[in-house]
Image (cartoon, rainbow, N blue to C red; front, side, top):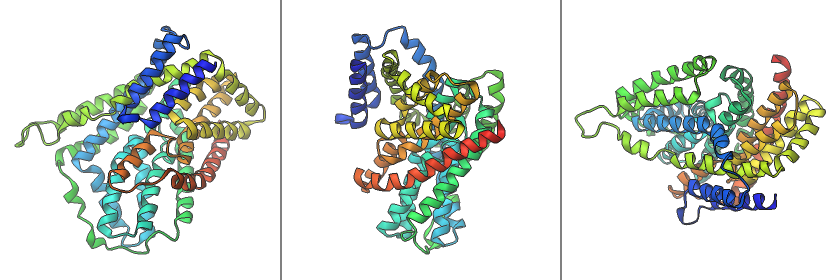
Length: 434
C-alpha cells in the first residue's frame, strides 16, 4: 500500500506542477509504467481501466472540439454581447446574467468549455467597459466559480459525471431527472453567495454603447447556424441514444464530425473559413493519455485495499440515513478533490462507494453525492479541477495573476455553503422522486 500511495503522490505532484511544461498525460503515463514495473498494477488491469475511461474521455474530447469550433465561429462572443446588452447598463444585472450564461455553457459544453471560452470574452468585456481591478476580479472569479458549480445537470456536463454515471449504470434520463433540479439549487446558491461576497465590488453601472454589436462577433454565419441547431439535436440525441445502448461518446463524436465538415467547407479562403485541422490538433489529447495513465495509478490504490477503507467510511454514513450519506460522502469527496484534483478522486470515490456495499438506492445516492463533491469541491483550491487550472492559465496569459493564497481565501468561503446546500437538496429531492 505504501508503494502504491507513493506512486500516486509522485504522479499527482508531476501532474499539478508540470515541470518544464510536461504534459499531464506524460506524467500520468510515467506513473502508470512505474506501477506496472513494481507490480502495484498488472497488465490485466489495463483493459479494466480502459473500459472505465474510454467513453467519458472520448465524450469530453468531442464536446471540447465542438466548443472550440463554435468559439471560432463567434457563437460564445455573440451570446455574451447579447447578455451584456440585456444588462441594460446595470452592473448587478450584468453580474447575474454572466453567471447564468456561464451555467448554460457549463451544462452543454462542460466546465472546461466555460473556462476556455467565456473567460477570455469576459476579460475583453472588462477592458472594453473600463471596470476597476476590484470589479474585474469579481467578474472573473464568478466566471471561474460557476464553471464548476453549474457542471452537474447532464451526464456530459463534466468528465466526472460521465465516469460516475457509466460506472454505476445511471441512465442519461435518470441522471437528468435528479441532477437538473439539484443544479438549479446549486446555481441559485452560487449566485446568492457570489452577489453577497462581491457586493461592494460589482460596478453600479456601465456603458452599453462601449460594447460591440452581437452580429459583429459572428465570423462564420453557416457554422454558427448549424452549430446552434446541432446543440438541440445533440441533447435530444443523448436522451434517445441511451435507451438503445448507444454511448454518449458516439453521439458527441457524430455531432462533432458534422460540425467539423461544415466548418471546414471550401471557401474563398484557402483551408476553409475555420481552421478545423488546427482546432482538432489543439484538442485535449493529453486528457486521453492522462485518463488511462492516472486511473491505472489509482487502480493500484484499489489493488492494495485503500478504497476498501474509504468504502467502510461511506458505509458508516449510509447506516445513518440518506442525509448523512449524501452530506458525508459529498464532503469527503470534495475534500479529496480539493487536495488532489477531482479527476483521480472520481475513480477513488466510485471504488469507495462500490466497496461500501450499500443497497441500490443508497448506492445511487452516494454516487450522485460524489458527483457533487467532485464538481463543487475543486473550487476550494486552485488545483482542484482541470477547468480551474485552465482558467488560471487563461488569466495569466492576460497578465492577471491570482495567487494561490488569494484564491484559497475566496474559494473556501464561496464553496462550503454552496456545497452543503446542494448536498442537502440532493437528499431531499431523492426522497421525493425515489
